[in-house]
Image (cartoon, rainbow, N blue to C red):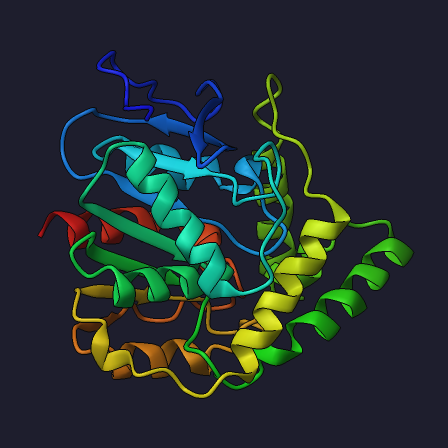
Length: 287
C-alpha cells in the first residue's frame, strides 16, 4: 500500500507533480497539494475529465488551507484499467483509491458526474465521508440527466463546425459574460505546460456516458441515507444537469445547504465564480 509522503506538499496546481498508487493491480494517477495535516479533500471529476480539467483557481484556492487530492478515474487519463459503465462501480474504485492512500476519513467535492459518485460513496461508506460539496450535479433519476449523451454529441458537433472547444457550449451560457468566462477558464486550463495528463480515450468517454445515462434513468435515490452535511452549488442556467436538480438535491438531503445559484452561469458555475465559491467552500468545510 502506498501512503502519503510526509514531505511538504506543493502549493500550486501548475507545478504539482504527478503521482501514482497501485489499487488491486491497477495504477491510479493523482496529484496532491496543500497542507499535510487535517482531513483531505478528494475531488471527483466530471464527464471526460482528467487531472488537467480542474480549474487551478479552485484547486489552489482550496489548497491554501486544505490538503487537496485530484485523481483520474479507472481507465481515464493516466490511470490504468478499463472504465466502468456504472456510477456505482466508479464509486467503488474511488473508495479503493482513497483507502490505498491510507485515509479513513475524507471530505468529498464532486462536480457533475463526480457528484453522482460522491452521493454513492456517502451513502455506502458513511464512516469514510465527513462532509460533501456537490456541484453541477443531481440525484439519480433527476430530470434531464438522461439527455446528457445527446446534448454532449450535439454540442461537440457544433464546436467542431465553429472551431471551438465544446466546453464553450456545454459549460457556459451563450451570453457576453458567459463567453468571456469560457475564454478565461480555457486559458486557465492551459497554465500547466509540463507533465500534463493524457486526454481521455474514446472508449472511456463512452463508458462514462453510459454510466451517466443509467444514473439518469434510475429510480429516485433515497437521499435520507446521506446524513453528512452537504453544500450544493450550481449555475442558474445549467444545460447539462438542469439546475432544478440542484435545488431538489439540496432540499432532499437531510443536511443539505443550497448555495444561491450563480447568475448567468452554467454547468461549471463553481469555476466561473471561483472567487465566490472557494471562500464559501472553505467556510463550510471548516465550520
